[in-house]
Image (cartoon, rainbow, N blue to C red; front, side, top):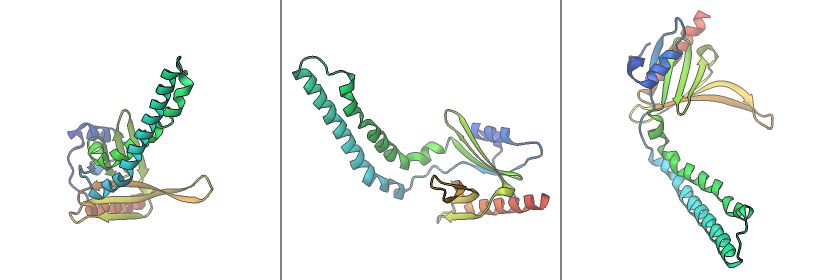
Length: 200
């Protein structure tokens, strides 16, 4: 089963995907993640807002305390004194990242593309540099599909196994989505995997 798709030269991401194709490799499907925000994703703000507010308050108070001490005691305390308020900066950064997390779909829509070929699953992300994840179809394992009411969703595909720092076995996965017609995308991927296994 092959799904109709826009020609990969239609945009920069499509061109990057086209350049990854090897001799004899055919693109069966490609798409970008949907530009859609989930209200559930904003639930992290219940934690992120007080976290960030406290981090900003704590860092501001620490800086004010150092500044007041320097003014009252005469000469500045030196750079070492400012290490204390700077301790709060990483917590501010973490808070800002949590606040930005629900907006990630808007950011990734124009910077990521998924592709299924007759040989591989490809995930390309263009930020400052281009990141290409390539998974050979014959090495893919189980597929989990999450589908929403409108037919869009994502796939979690087992790509291998590894071990964590404690030596425990872990499962490595690749995620495709959120894209439209996810059931048809899964069918395309499964069909391509079966054909690839027959070819080998």
